[in-house]
Image 1 (spheres, rainbow, N blue to C red):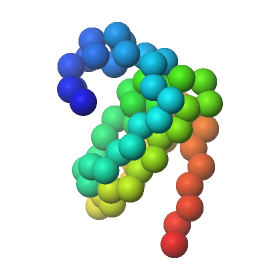
Image 2 (image 1 turned 135 degrees about the vertical axis):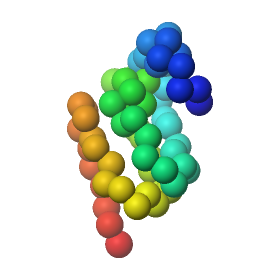
Image 3 (image 1 turned 90 degrees about the vertical axis):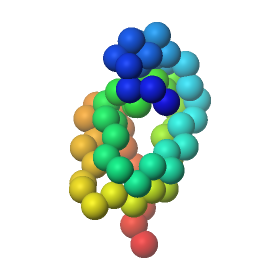
Image 4 (image 1 turned 180 degrees about the vertical axis):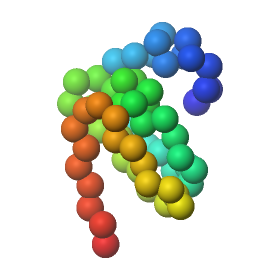
Length: 63
């Protein structure tokens, strides 16, 4: 995924699923905006910094 600001706008509300395997902080509000209604974002990469949920409903588990 590109970090170009226009990409987030052009692709808004187009994905049903985003699988994030990056182990670095990402702009969650931008990625959550790419999801369609009731879309799912799965984060499997471990970061050393807390992720900021921004807008939307977030659910998760920790083991």
